[in-house]
Image 1 (cartoon, rainbow, N blue to C red):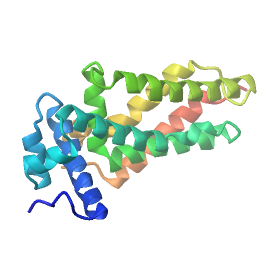
Image 2 (cartoon, rainbow, N blue to C red):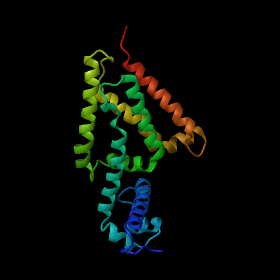
Image 3 (spheres, helix red, strand yellow):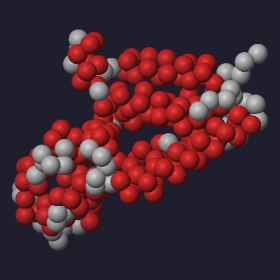
Image 4 (cartoon, one colour):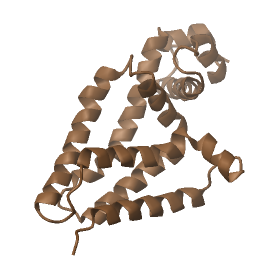
Length: 210
């Protein structure tokens, strides 16, 4: 049953959340071009007309989905801002946060991945203005640690690229992983093993030579 547009704000928020959840999964499965407002409405259990009251265009809905994804992702990625922390602790926390996002928000991760793979046609400016400064800030943290002799010298940019690839693959390529593992989904044990392995690899790569 459709929720009337003059209902209480709390019900409006719940409906928007339901629309965004349905849209996130559909965009992740079908991409922007392969998704329709009608299909999102059907998944959310409302009429197309009601959905259009909240999100008048597919492009607007898509951008809102990506905004939500990026807001969540950036909030979880604040760990490297602590330049005064112990590098090993900070890096392990960063890996854990990225894997937790992959486990808790796999559809969100895939929507973002599909947008980037497609050339970031709709969201490139937001990536430039929001993600690039985050990357630069984290590179500065690595550079400061290197200058202080706290970690070995590495190419910090490519280290972060590698961290993103290793952790996000547990969402974006989960289907391939489950085929290899011959089970329907990744388990908590898989994510725990990944966190330990990736953390160990990064810590060893950055260890100062005696």
